[in-house]
Structure formats: structure tokens, C-alpha cells
Length: 126
Picture 1: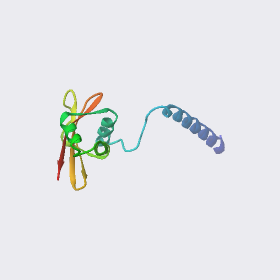
Picture 2: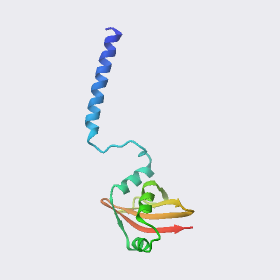
Picture 3: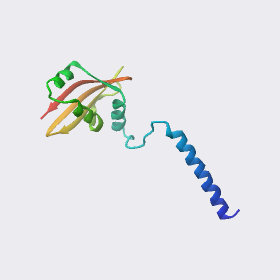
């Protein structure tokens, strides 16, 4: 078989494979961008759930010491501190997430359950 025939078969099969791949992955919520590390997976998992606030964190929100946009930003771009977290705690793991903003460090303690995420506490350190 000549090279040009082999190349044609290869390109034909490759094109069919691309069409099938696009068909199968089109409807699903697949993403391959930055979701490989444990920190990214934890933050993505927390952000896909309904976020509830504990009474302590609601008081800080009512006193306008922190707003919900800042909390959402920290939950998307913050750093998970695994040394202080308890990911295997039953029934819900507890994660400490921090981010520096305006010369202050904001530390969130989030209880990550199967269907919800509860913001347990907020610490603002100068």
C-alpha cells in the first residue's frame, strides 16, 4: 500500500475520532483547565455546592466587616491550608482557606458536606 493511501486512512480515522470525541464531550461539564491539583479540586468542589453561613459568619456580614463578594472571591482563588484542615473528618470535612487582601489576611473555615458547604468562621488578621 502506498504512503498516500495510508495517510488517507489515517486522516479519515482521525477525523471520525474527533467527531465522536466532540459528540461525547459536548453535553458534559468537562473541564481540563487547572483542576489537577488537590487545592483546585477542593475549591471547585466547594464552589459547586450551596453555600450556607453559620451564625458567627452572618454577624460579620451584618456588621459589614466582610462582604459576600469577598467571600466568593476567596473561595475561588484562595489558598487551602491542608496542614490545618481536616479533610477526612466525618461526616463533613473542614477546610481552612486563606487569602491576603488589602494588607490583611482573611481565613475562612468551611465545612464541606456532600450537598452543602457551610462557612463556619471568618478570621481577619492584620
